[in-house]
Length: 423
Image (tube, rainbow, N blue to C red; front, side):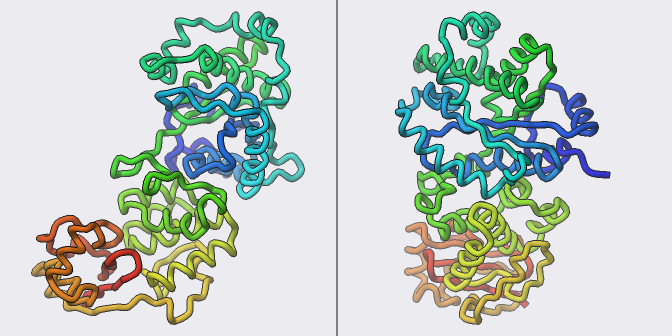
């Protein structure tokens, strides 16, 4: 029996809230549906923060349903106040149209638009020519200002100043859902958890105007385990456009994520089976990161580019599983790396690890530092890493808790790397 896409999304960590769990599961069990997510065109590229909704649409399509990626050519001109402490920068119609052209190309890397299996629409087609007075009479009369002000996106902005322009955003997004339900038989809208108020407003408006039951789903806000906003690296967004974030840097962003985030990201951002998602991080964590980086890069930029990035990283930093001992369905195992790509290795006795190895001495023994003093300076300057985790304590001792699969990778800066194998 084909698995219900709602169960798949829940199992992989996509579901934060829905308007009716049981009704949604029943609907998705009984028929093929149309589901949409909106993406405002605020830049010439989407960034990895948009990957949760994009991957949700991928799963919708994989399960035989029809996804709609809705480009916000109209709503971008107003600006969504959600998640912002100040008004978004006003963009011209020409800027929005130009951004939309780039974003359309990125959707094609994830969704199959042939034969209407997926639709790419633009809400500018029905929003820009609206008659304002008629819109207020037809749509505005269904909205309570008191109720709108209880929405989380508005409550936050009221403290810093909510413009009347932005106040209209909820009405426009709700109108989008109504139009898509009317013209495309769309029954489900999905979005981030900060979109809950807008989605519920659309459900209510569609019920009132069409006497049609539709549903909403929201995704959890993704933060890294260290408390940083997901999709940022050294203060910069990680973009899907290779001209804004080079493909190698895109790959390395995923390769260097926190160990604690690997399992969650494998579930959200790859199509690997959940058995594998649950198993990979429990073994060789660095191989799991390589697989995560390879799979996310393959989806965003294609298989050839993923192979190039993987090979380039292997030649620069070495491989965490050169003999491909880790079982995986990823075709990363089909990529051939030249011998020069193997990481330099130092073999130590397991007995030394059992006693605890002073991290300073380990960097000296691995010939990454010439003296204890140099190793200490490396740690103070933030350039020492164990399994991609920065070392901050000069007194730290490496123990069996720090290793997986009998090895550990230590780095001095970005380019000098050594694998320590314990036998």
